[in-house]
Length: 229
Image (cartoon, rainbow, N blue to C red; front, side, top):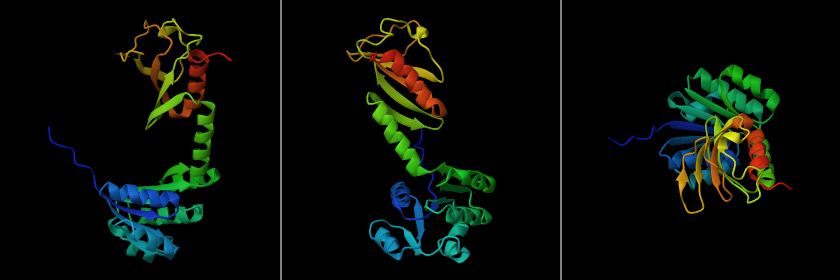
């Protein structure tokens, strides 16, 4: 079987804040050709000192700036500024140039529909998403996220010694919007669970939860697999 080669792209990143700079680094490290646009010339000079990118100091809502950045051959444009008007206009122009993949952050939720109407893939307020995730982990200190995949996340949860569902079969658990993937036992055994497998203290249970039901699913698991306070 042959090796699957990664798909390389010409990517334009609008905005060199924390997200834009991180995206530039990821894109370059994955072998893509990258152009970045930012109105701050100092940011542009700084990034070309660290990465092999084309840096354009200018306004990404200006057609000529996008042309200078190579919009006519771009496979993707990602808008990351803190100004939704700038992001939306840059994405709209990218669509006019038939860029196949156009992605943007949206800083204010009420603007989301405008981006969707233009046909832009969006990620809503990144600061809010990070804050929610940090707060979630303060409430769930014994959970470990193993992976985030489209549509959901994979977590590992440790079963407490005094958990209500110890010695019960898996089929007795209250289950909504999550599935068990595997159970790791204390001696290192890994079990692909069926409904008749009994939960033991010290089990590490790996589960998949839907993204939109993640909080409710994990609260449900905590009630059944963690020590009652």
